Image 1 (cartoon, rainbow, N blue to C red):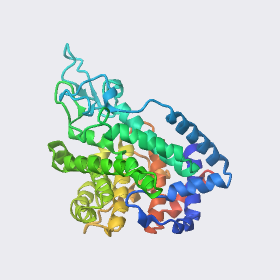
Image 2: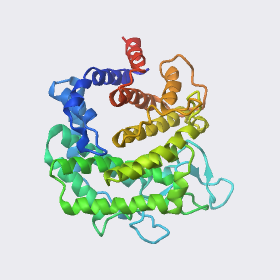
Image 3: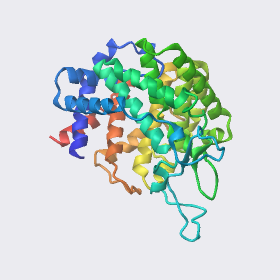
Image 4: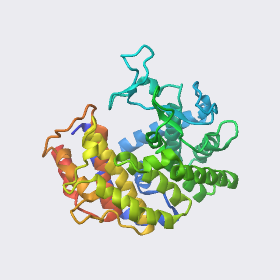
Length: 396
């Protein structure tokens, strides 16, 4: 384990040992937003924790830069969607490259896990939307930790520009996402690129709770989210993504259900979790906890963690509507918990990861550790306490 991950473990240990502070937070007021991690960071800053203060100062630096930065919009791209409407989002499948066997490079060919730089430039919207969603997340955290309304006001301005203003708004669809030159204009797999919509929803909840969200913006965003969720449920690409049997299907559920929860459609969320999501757990996770479709990828450790994180988010949504996904288990032992138990020996070095992993996995280890803390915090499950303690002791 690296020093960075060890430091993160110390922070996670603080979360566990200070779990009592969470009782002070009225989480029932919120459908999607969770205050716990932000509240802990705020407490560390107030208490003068050196590392927390460094991170806090860096965060405010980034947030201050966003106050005067150029706003984000889909109309800034140099490319043009097949619809000839700049307001439609476009992107290229990241793992698709020019064909070396044809003069024009078409049709593109796939290299799993290897990102084509062409998919990460201003010809498409991917980078612009990634930066926009990151900005909303940073401004949300900066506002919460500092209590400076200027950050929240800036976030509202950026949201209005991206989603609502007539000249700059994004149309509520992803019809042309993750296209493959020479093959198609868009694929269902591009839906995962808007995963960060949950961060926008969390900010909207926070801004409304603090009486900062004006009625026009709130109603406009509700209309946009209704239209987009209808597209997710009824479009050809949305339906196709909902049937994916790997992490794409899982994160489709997270995205759709987070939106429906924000729109107060709890009965629909509850029915979906009890039927489709439970079936997804059974189909994707083996009785031993392995995830075959993720293990088949060139970044198998990373994708295994990514998919489990999505399932954990769904379990958290389930807690909001009375569906216990964390304890759910099939007759032959398939469950989210079993998936995490499968990964633990590889995290603590008891077993060697024998599947393909062409990229560094440190960030995935960090996410896995954070998930184990979330398990305790949300579900009062102490199963992984010894794992966290062991990782910490191994570095002392």
